[in-house]
Image (cartoon, rainbow, N blue to C red; front, side, top):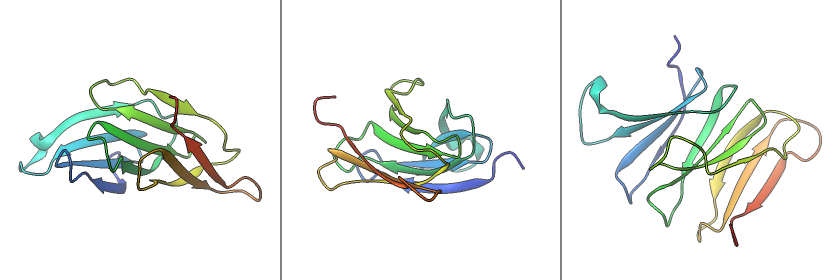
Length: 124
């Protein structure tokens, strides 16, 4: 179906669950609720499968997502528009994580070269 889940990330700060999907969407869920009504927000900007999502470890509003569309997106979940779209990968991006200070976003992807990227948020 169009809501195949490809990744999950839980925020201990906001108590929200983020999920990546094969329909190019990121969905935010209230983990305390039950049923389909627990989807609080749908973020649609990727042009390919969302392969991974990761919450910031220090900011309850910041979420990173990566996709088969070769992009890394940084979201402030108070808006449906991404803060940044990073396009340094040359092939699909498969995984994402934050460093412990949430100053860096690390992403990995397919391809023979430049398959690991470090994106600095300092000064952003």
